[in-house]
Length: 391
Image 1 (spheres, rainbow, N blue to C red):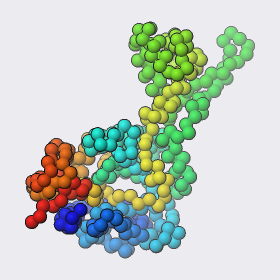
Image 2 (image 1 turned 180 degrees about the vertical axis):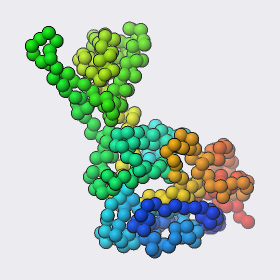
Image 3 (image 1 turned 60 degrees about the vertical axis):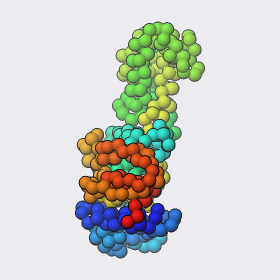
């Protein structure tokens, strides 16, 4: 990035911060703060181990320093400005989750557009929220668009703030489905034998919630599809599973038809063939419904995370808080475009041509000198795809 480009970005970031209203996180004075200034050279240098006492008022600091990136810590400390982690005196920490579109299954770098990547990431966000809200019952959640490639979720419930790394690791494993054992989701109940004196065991897949309910839902949805087929197609479909031949497929189909009510209630062990088929859906369900979070972010009790309301220096988009009720309608490539950068055009020298989807429009940008809406030009400059035109 050339100096004239860096200077222009610094100046426009300052203009944004002059108008922006930035709300610090709870207990802001107990958190460590860090930021990356606009400096020359390839190395990114973070200035960290700062407290608000060091920085001063957040909005004044941002207007004065107009940093490229700004962060605060998930952790709370006795002395957040101390120069080492051992000296800070850790108290507790938010539970933070990070979803990064670049690392998601289903995203193909170089082929998927920025908009497509963010849409895939939003789908993953919904899966994560399903775990956090339904499985764990967390209530104090803050959802944030990162301004770049994904979303953050901050959990501030009292029950999680004092968790150590190993306990946060257990939450990570749960939402990722790591180490999930199908047999642990099966409840065993002793019932009287049907016309026999010897009692029998009934094994039922838990359906009240959690991974058991997810597996059961996916399995019964699959059975709906299979039972809607004619017999020949259904048997062929069932044989697509390893270890299920024609005979076992026929048995599974018959058992599914004659015991559907019991299967819907969770009794997937009505027949050996059905039980084996249901077990195959544990792995499928984990692959399809886990939340592919950035694991080290959640386990790190000292993690620095982007400040909502600040600007992302790699996109010139705003880091946006999102109300839970507004998530469905939130479009990051529209709603995160700062108003400060709209309404006029500037000239830039494009070095990385291509399609840019931003502000509700699609721009096909050619190499060379271009006059573009400023928010598009700033996006390209921040991404290293354009330089400010020489005056």
